[in-house]
Length: 99
Image 1 (cartoon, rainbow, N blue to C red):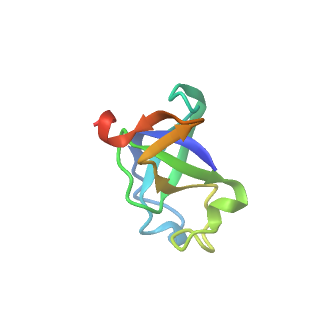
Image 2 (image 1 turned 90 degrees about the vertical axis):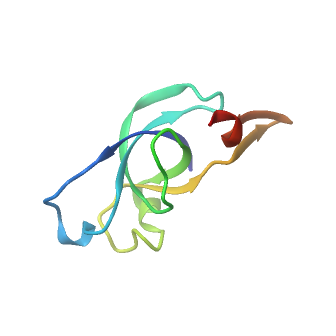
């Protein structure tokens, strides 16, 4: 699992039929300090995330392990919305304070 921040949405009106009904979001990978790392990633949303939220996501074959993405050709999935991130007793991220 990786940390990411939702930075946008993706709409595709024409797509593989098995992808019908999926919501796609654009993510930027972040580190535990909340700093952006790496490039962008498009992921299927399995939990109802929104723009600016910090999320946990998986890629590769793990992305097809959720109920929403099972048996679908997905390489990225958002599987959790982060409420709090604490490392060694220090809160690095708190959703309530970020809002």
